[in-house]
Length: 404
Image (tube, rainbow, N blue to C red; front, side, top):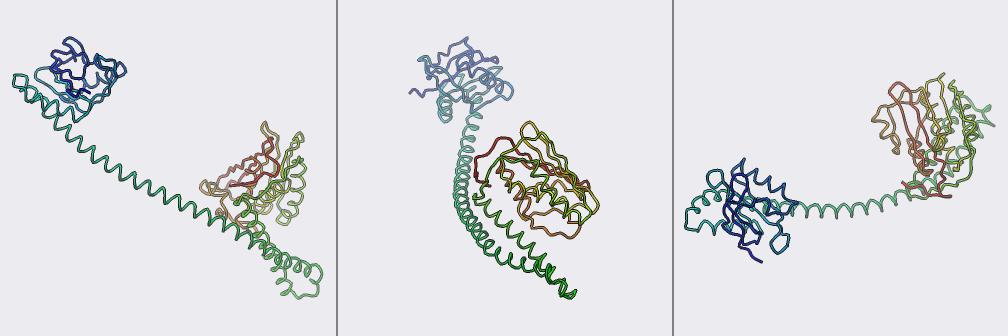
């Protein structure tokens, strides 16, 4: 390859006045425009290069594609500077270092042009060398940062693997512990209920209160254990959905009837409106009932005595929509963002001292997503909250796994 380079003297408009060297075979000739030497796709860039020469008096490190007389397209480097009057000297080569060499050869020419060339290209040459030094430093810094990033990515990958192992071990432990705790808790709860039903009359008030405390505490602990089992199954991807055609309206009506008994103790009313045209949906009936118990139970729990909880079941173009509206304390926007995370609770407190495991809404979200549905929340502080569950018509595969 010829490395002799290109050297042109052009007027202020970019027309070639004199060809000092054309070792690149670009067909440079007086009268042609500099932009004619480059590939048509780079014509605009060539004009920009000349614009910088006119405005700043010098330009360097411009890369333009040009077609040689042999028909080959090459990527070339160009620099230029004022050469006296309104003219410019333009130098080109196949690399930035070669551009510098062309200049150094030109300044050795012992004629009147050399003086103008020295003045025009000295600053360009110095800038080229300075740019090469800066580029080298930048390259070294980028290489170092890239190596650091690769090391961090490897360490992160190792940490992710270790965390995955720990998470599986945690889920196994939760499952085993909750399973082993469930049976003795059920025994405690059963005996406490028996004592209240059969022996309450023979107990003095203090002992009767003891038994009631045992019953309420064991009920809460058993509910917590059941929730922990559900969370462990969900996170391990082993919670299965037994899908069948379900009359969703009838399911909601039965669930509301059961929750009305608990709501009545607080003087809270539950109103139900159900679309009679709602067709059967393919669902896991037990899991959707668990969703309803959580949402309606929470609405009763956080609503003041004497208020109304509204439950709606509507048929939409894509499936069924269940909404539960309460008249409670409402939620702040930042609370809504973390509401469905395990063990997360908002600032609102139950209005009759009811306890919460902090797992119910996390389970609701996973079950609904396992049905390819969605849970939405609308709320404002002091204005109550509305939880909406959207269940699509399209059925998920029978015994589908609910993963994270």
